[in-house]
Image (cartoon, rainbow, N blue to C red; front, top):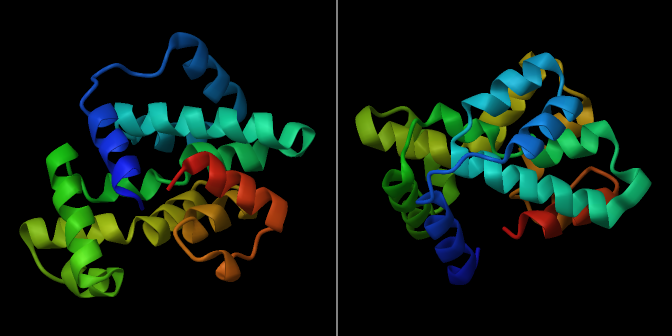
Length: 171
C-alpha cells in the first residue's frame, strides 16, 4: 500500500458520517439479509469505503458486476470487525504488519490484549472469508475477501473481475 493511500484512508476514517441514505438503500438491494448484518457491523468509514469500491466496480464491469461481485466489493474488509480496533489501533496494526510481515499475524493472535487485536486485524482476509461462508455468501464473494491482499498471480477469480475489484479498492 502506498503512503498516499494510507493517508487518504486515515483521514477518511476520521470523518464520522455514515454512507448516505441512498447508498444504504442500494446496499440493502445488493446484499442478502445475513450479509447485510455483517456489513452493518463494519465501521462507518469502512462502509463508506466499501460503497465507493462497489460503485467503481459497477462502473468498470457494467453487466459483469453481478450481485456476488458487488457483494465482494462491499464486504471484502468485513473481517476487520473481528479485531475491534479503532482508527489509531489500525494505524499501529498496519505499521506492525509492514515492519514484521503479515506472517507474524497468526502468532500474534495467540497472544492477549492489543497484540492479539493486531494479529486479528492483519488476518482480516481469512476471518472475513469465514464470516461470509457462515453467512452463506456466494463463493466468489468469499474468495475475494480471502484473496484481496494476495498478489495477482495468486488470485483464483476470473482475471477481469479480480482486476476490477483490486483497482476499485485502491489498496
